[in-house]
Length: 222
Image 1 (cartoon, helix red, strand yellow):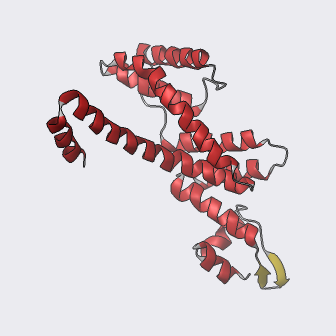
Image 2 (cartoon, rainbow, N blue to C red; image 1 turned 90 degrees about the horizontal axis):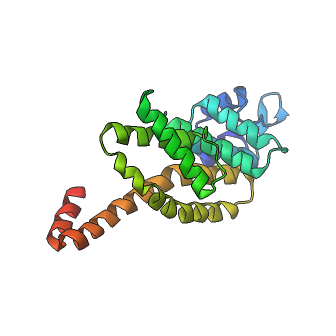
């Protein structure tokens, strides 16, 4: 296909496609004449992935380039490819909140204990682990350190969701499709999980505090 058709099919403007080619994010098309090139389905898939990483994942172009280099390395296991994408997204979503202090040290210890207790094969330096430590430190500073008693309850809920996410990802064939699934699942999946949690709060509130309170909370939340 010509670049104009590639633009129509992908929704990416022609000047942007040319920019991605210049920056090495998108392979150049096959030259058919000095001023014409032909593009294939692989170019369309790569453009879709770039836009997902940019628009949904919130990654910078330099971070996207890092992820794409990992994808294009045939020696990288799929687990490493998915990890590179997820870690970049986690880093882009939010830096570790909070400042250094006793709360931060305590929070890091709590995260380390959680990982050991659950037997999760995750480094304490993982961006998600650092983000969790930041949240726990903020809870301690706000005087709600007792909320950490719910860590395992949250972990119990997160594990089946993670496995369901990966079952969805496993049905993808191309490495680009795998990474795109991780982007969508990490960003939009978390938003979906958060909305479902709020709905569950309304239902639980109705059961604990009475139907009237639950209905009023539901209206307020809406």
